[in-house]
Image 1 (cartoon, rainbow, N blue to C red):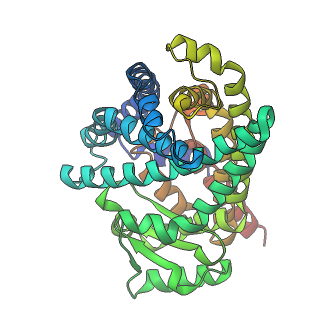
Image 2: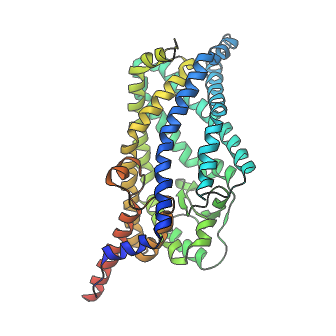
Image 3: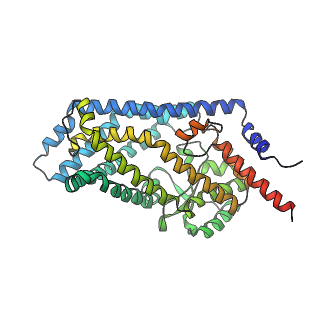
Length: 390
């Protein structure tokens, strides 16, 4: 009987069972609604901070200090206060919602501790970034939005370079992959990608999530392969190799730099539009701040957040393209289509594998699992055909 990619794909997806598929559909749809919920929470937080006059009072207390200190402190205050106000929503979205679907086993106290660390880190970095934005507004005037793209690109590149070294180890423990067949296989793959052996690591991803994950992060000397302990426990050797081949594909094909280019474009467009509508939105919230006033940061970020939602289909489309290319790289270099398909099905537990075309286009950062498995099966069919003609 001839190999049928469509039938094999259906077999892989259906192997999850109707109950798991329904649960994945429910989780995925609810996750999309959380995006709207987050936007509503952001609007409420903006209204509270603006109407309280908190940032104006902070700025007034240090009005005789240097501009950079006054601006940086105002921005830092906003990020900390907004995070604290929205903490109940963050706890629900990132913890209780995930726990209700069995996607995390993290103790609440550990989650809260990591959340506080994340707030401190993101507040510092966010304050530093917007100090740069307001400096550009002062220096560049009406063209500030154009220069902001360069600043966003620099920030993104610095984060990509330094995150594996300075940020990620704060939240997870990274250790060498234990001796054995998996480590041997991964070291061979690392050699092909030019990644040093001491950068092939396993991390305790199960601390935060029960999801099946692996990644290649960093660039140049900070590049590394990292396999979650969840994947190490759940996957066969071939599945680990297929997934790692996918992640190495991202690295070899330079997808990180494509992402930086997208960030430049989105940042420029977002800040350009924010500059045009800022005064009207500020008036709706009862704020007299101008776009160059740090006290108007809540308004500026709310506008950018709303525009970011509308830009999501574009961002997701570019990301899906990279994911497809990485799958193709894994199939070409590792050539384990069944292992890749089996690994992808494990991710279908938290990403419904059969979305509508519209749902996928708007919300999915990865092609649907069904499409990805189908491509793997079509690759397998091609290899079987080639073998049969020899």
